[in-house]
Length: 243
Image (cartoon, rainbow, N blue to C red; front, side, top):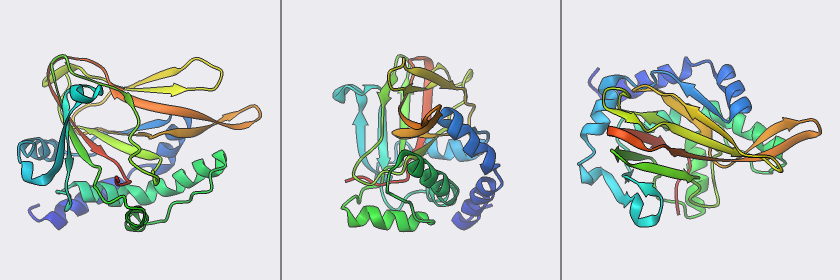
């Protein structure tokens, strides 16, 4: 499988074959859903191997300089490298109906079009022109503070992270963590165990939860716990672009 089109088609087939009804149920219940083995080990290794190739990135962020935690990440530039376009374009149509149901339940008027290209056109019209997919690198002692990836007026309410390294071999610690801030209640934490190539879909900001009197909103944040040893790489796939 040598051409970009062949590799993209293989990823799209994996995504379309997923049980999206079950994924939607998990997102509704917990605000996140794991997708095992979304990328192969060679696909993960190829993304890591290009970490030093500055020509494919638009910026580098050292987290400690901004109070974001410790570690660093790089935002990709357009055109996005293989396989990131395929991940966004193939996943979005499955997620848009779910995002629309969430907005309806929360009384939010915004609705998302069926195709990712249409949503990106909406972002561009509002001046959100910069690509948001990124690759993150953590070394021993690094961590990512709880946060949200918003970037502008137009925000798609679900995003994806894919672990590119193998826990127990490449690193220890460094768990993916989410918190759910509930009104008039204590916050709830969720830890999602991932292996190399596994993805997690999760709420970017607010999501609806069914209560005894209808739906109420909870606010989600995500981060990464302290890396105890080794190196950890993650691909972040965000569906809206940035100002």
